[in-house]
Image (cartoon, rainbow, N blue to C red):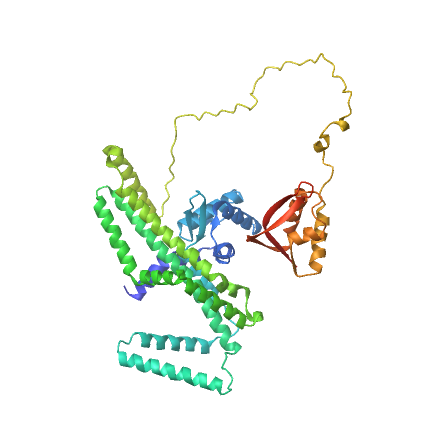
Length: 486
């Protein structure tokens, strides 16, 4: 395929190009960026719908003919339509957790669009030196590791050894170590961050490949005239082709690297050293991505393996399917329905179909008051209630019917402030001890825990604190260690 034809196909068929063609692309891209790209976390459907509804209300969006949204729709209805359209067009992906809750995340297409748009931003300066040195280093590495001549490889290694020895001798002789200047540091740092973000999109593409194999398994099973052996053979061939491809080999090699404990520790140490060596004033907020990159990559890689597991589960159900469990006629009808639905799905058509039940649901609400026109009988009390001779104040345990005291949260908050004046951090048990203990029992302790939300604090589940709450009965409670920070 020529590059001209390739560009034509991308412009006509790619969800990336379709997203940029939309008339409301600005408000859509900004919402996707703030909701998904910025935080790199999936969002539950209910939460996504609520956020989108609030966003559309804040910008006062009335209609969007491209997405069948009109002025008479409520903002909840507009949000619902947008989510459905974005999913159908490939801007969003969804998956269902074991609990049944549906989560949404950016597709690889939307991620690439945002990556590309951010790359168009004009930097303070163009790091030509860093780009050239990066290019030079990659060419040098490629030349080295494509050379199979042992003698030539030994010569290259000896040259590296001489360069390293020269640097060591220079430092021992008292010469200053060469360090990058700001114009050399910042472009390299931002190139690393940009490459790391693009890596997440690559993970999503591998996941999409597994899902496409699963979809093909569904389609071949729906055709009905394909045997289980043929489906099993197709699956193994597709998996082998994926694993032997350059993309598959690269992913599995990287995943093994990511799961190696020694490599994880080395990565953490390198990232910490990198951020410590760079002036904090030069680091923008979006450049803190590397701090959490390992977790982002782990979550994305886990989704790839989940897609693989889902494919294996579907294949297992097909292989273990009992042909005697349903008649040939009903099986053929189900396969025909599946085949039609798959054909519609390949054309991005969602059929407006539903099931209508002939039975009326029976609702039983035994405690609910019945609707009736009959008047209720009046109840007449003939006996006069006598006044008790004893005083209620003399009754045993009567004081427990009333709240004799409450917990003043402002006092608890002041106690914490007083403790933090003397030190940078303090544990909850120290605050309680310095205040003379819990005068009002567990209610006062729960009051402290409620007040702590307004302070910076950490909770260490691996360590515990024992706090007495009833000195007379020698009762105490064990809670996780809570440290309050100034």
